[in-house]
Length: 147
Image (cartoon, rainbow, N blue to C red):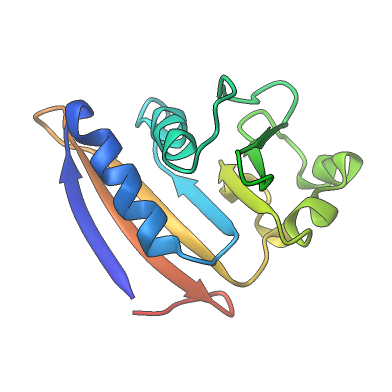
């Protein structure tokens, strides 16, 4: 299953709604894109869409931020950009987070490939020449693209 969209910053909330609908019950969402592609900006819009009222920011230094929505659902936001050795994430208990049955939004997952669950939604963001973004949503099952 794969969906592709193009959007401008003004349309980001509409895209967030489509992403939430696409992801449905999958709890692990991997955001992939170059530095400056808009991963954190997109996550902020998704957070708003799912009812998170807290200030959402990139957990670049803490590695993980925790948010709650009005339905008492827990969302963990990870940023592994600064990870140099994948085993560093064991210190924060990354596996407990990933298998907690709570939502996990992950930036820079490519830094910790051996620790990712086999099932997740891949959200790839690409900057287009006109400054808009192209987003590709893919369901990954057993480590392979389902589509």
